[in-house]
Image 1 (tube, rainbow, N blue to C red):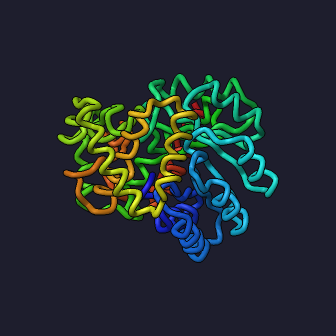
Image 2: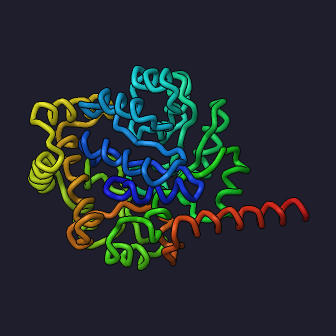
Image 3: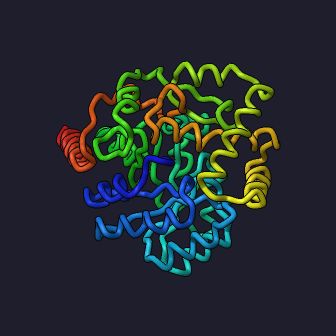
Amino acid sequence: MGWVAGPRLVSATANAGGLGILAAATMDYDQLSSAIDEVKAATEAPFGVNLRADAPDAAARIDLLIDKGVKVGSFALAPDQDLITRLKDAGVVVIPSIGAKRHAEKVAQWGVDAVLVQGGEGGGHTGAVPISLLLPQVVDAVDIPVIAAGGYFDGRGLVAALAYGAAGIAMGTRFLMTADAPVPDAVKDVYLSKDVNGTIRTTQVDGVPHRVLRTELTEHLDGGNPLTSLPRAVRNGLAFKKISGISFADLFKEGRAMRRRQELTWSQVVMAANTPMLLKAAMVDGRPDLGVMSGGQVVGVIDDLPTVEELLERIMAEADAVLTRLTSS
């Protein structure tokens, strides 16, 4: 949830009893350090930081988490075993996100504490298998807690996930569509206007499957081709380089790591440069017409913007009501 899961949303989630996760991929090292300090000043509850294992300064960021006493480290992409070991040795809970049974089995062997499994309904980078099929596969394959993501928004979904064997649920789009999310109102209005067919899963944003809101821009991108996408991707990559302060050497190193870890072509690696800037245009600059908005299919069943505290209280009350009904029938 780059540009969205910052200190404001994370601290609100932590104070409401959830586990907020800082999205560090769109922050440079100093920004991440400041964001951690801001969250710690706003809450005494535990929170986490989401890292990119293929970032050039991943090791330094892990040292930062350890030094600042962050309780949870999560990974959006396949983590490195050495990075997991360093976090575990320091007492940090490690929760990578995975999208396939084999990935869960692999990281479980490396000693992670839990896995977050996202079904194809979920927003952002996602696979094709729905959570109703993927979740039971993963639960049966590993003996560590499994957190379910993709399509969750209420207490009924929480109970359903628990019935499949999950330890809990994670939500992205639902938290984005709250009063505490630092997203411009004009962008939230776009989300509220969508139905369950209002998203598109495409590889044309950044080279890998990415679920985003269906807009004139994303439909144009989806119908494009590498010859038209590459120049735009290069421009956006250079713009993100300027914002992040990353050097050309590190940019190339990161691209090479992405290519190796995700088995991308160089063309896809260059296209991946689209993502940070296209997301920023909407989520920060408030220009949904110029940007890309990640979102799950669940966007079509959300029609309000509660505070995070109101949302979590509602979900827990709904879950209690469903469990009471099921156990009394």
